[in-house]
Image (cartoon, rainbow, N blue to C red; front, side, top):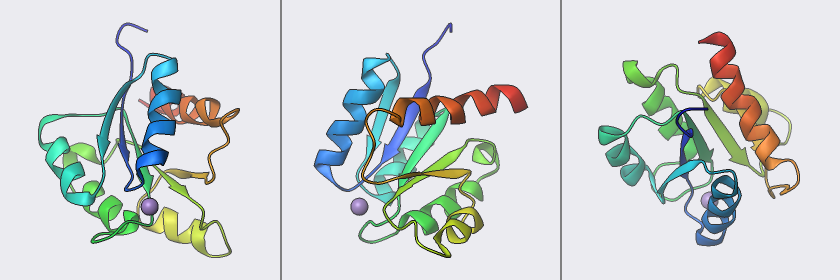
Length: 129
Ligand code: MN
């Protein structure tokens, strides 16, 4: 592809950020990182990512609330937001989708399938877009 996709990763945990960054950069994706909702919203003032990977459990504003907020901004309505969460218990899938997320990836991250999952959500945009 002409331009590598840009992915915004919102995650308060440093080690998770390193892991995801390493995986995404291994296929030359461009990575933006925020460790909380404020940082994410600041980044979105000047950037337009192709995909947002969203941690759910964060201090201050959780990923559900932040996703809802981002999706209420018209120009980001069609940017896929994929939750990365360990909370995949009953009801959480509904909660993730209700918040406006387009899907989720389970934590702990499976390094063997992570990039396939990300690329599936990226391809989805191209199919629908
Ligand atoms: Mn977290």
